[in-house]
Image (tube, rainbow, N blue to C red; front, top):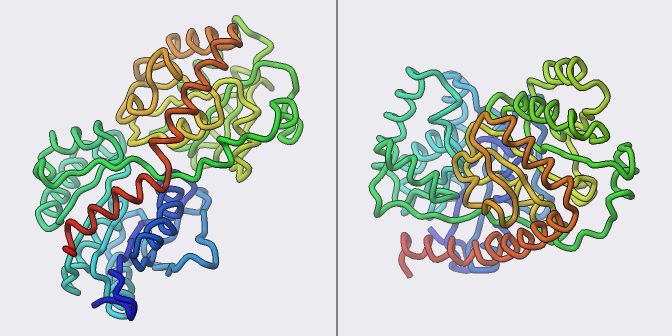
Length: 385
């Protein structure tokens, strides 16, 4: 069923719009898809209390599915399916596009119920390694294999994510498409605040080396490794300040560890909504994750002209070109991370050069317009003219 103007209707179903890459991607992409002739609606669930949330603006068609949550809960999941089915029966989408694991399972089930003409699922990274113990991983892999057989197109945000999932037997190569994140990078590309101004706003000391990490304080982000790196780097640069931007279940544990090993040289900022100020305050941005799809924090850092140092996991190498816009280190290598951070802190010209290289690269690859063109082409391939 088409809307009165004949536009195909696309229902996007996402587990939650917690602060992070998937939410930023989806909200940046929707206006672009509407410009390309699609009617869109976002159905989104409820984040956990410590995750933070990016709510759609008043002009963004959206609907909260209250029972849709990330944890496995059969009763709540059934309520979510019921809510989502009612919404889909009212909206009558031509295509259902799901995001993240829980919404992917429930949303694709509902798409079959309402006989949608097309079904797309997008993996924003994946939870099949690093999140759960082996028995749970095996169950999730089997479920994703079954779901893939009932999906018209599978989308990954990086080549590495696609290759990982293909190796696990999820989908056939012909079904896979790689679409980078669409992000609104304009405020970062046009950074209008100096480092000292930004540090003043954030209550950080001015005129000292500042190294930061941005993201949820959860096990997969491995902030313990960031603190180990900071301890090693501060032995050579005792003047450096280390910034942790974000929040999550591990905050109290990490704050206690940071106080024990580094004292007041680590500052916890919580969530920051003023991204230009946050990244302007940092000389180097670090990522220590155990697994990543596309690391949005690193894309944002590069857009702001900041070089990055990161563990070489998942899709990180799709963003970080070692030696060009930042450095890569092996997962768990605190010494290697510290050495690269110290290299950059000691060479301002190299920091600026790497930052400019990174800014130029991400501006084109992650523009919402470019990604929307490719997404619209995929929809048209599935739905027909």
